[in-house]
Amino acid sequence: MHHERHGAGEPLLLITGWTISAAVFEPVLEQYAEHFECITYDHRGSARSGGKPPTSMGALADDASRLLTELRIPRAHVYGVSMGGMVAQELALRHPARVRGLVLGGTTPGGPFAPRLGPLDVMAIARGGLEERGLRGPVLFSEAFRREHPERVRELLRHFTANRSSAAAIGAQLLASARFNAVSRLPRLRAPTLVMHGERDRLVPLAASRLLAARIPDAELAVVPGAGHAYALEAPRESLELLLEWRERRLPGSRPREEAHVASDR
View (spheres, rainbow, N blue to C red):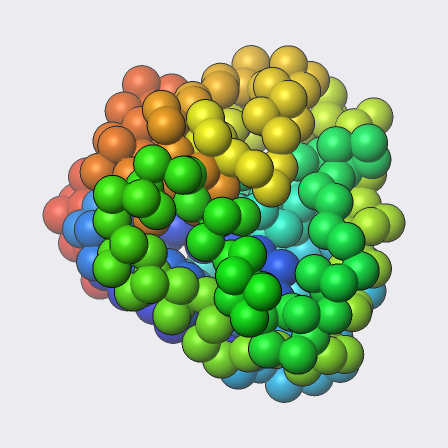
């Protein structure tokens, strides 16, 4: 699988969403790499990764675990966004020893809380992207952000359309998302968990994150005020501060970047 490593410190595995390559993290990667060693990758069979696209979240989660093994990383913080948050849930359920801390961003446990896209939207993505119907901006960003920062929106959207996935990969990930339902298994999660969501998310209802936070033992919910589905890009400073504050408070054993970097060189 195509993957990249940036920064130094405790490893942070960033898991991207449906049909989107890890290029989506590029606008904020430098900021996160000041605090973590960030590992990004494209899902098997999509974007820049080869292989047959998996049709289940379990297989996608196993891929993530294998990647950590190949990189000789026994344990990492895991941050999944949108569909990547579903993969992160499965990773924490199937391979709990791999997960130091779990961050679920703008995602859902599936079932009745799964995001809904119409057939025309799915066809538009397969042809080259929701932007052809003028939908990507409204789906991803809040109305206020689109109105006040149109140039920034256009710049950010280029990262969503980079390294497009094949129709086969899009269909496989759509099937995996449709099949996913972790609601009854959430109480089994034991990793310290932060659930993050944009207040104005139009793709995944905030109720999905409220359910995640309620069902996962001792999880916390952080809502990014005024932000849409892509809250980490729309409000990068606020989102990162919420993550770092939670890590310092809930994972006191986490080492600062400098100490972790020295330890990794030994």
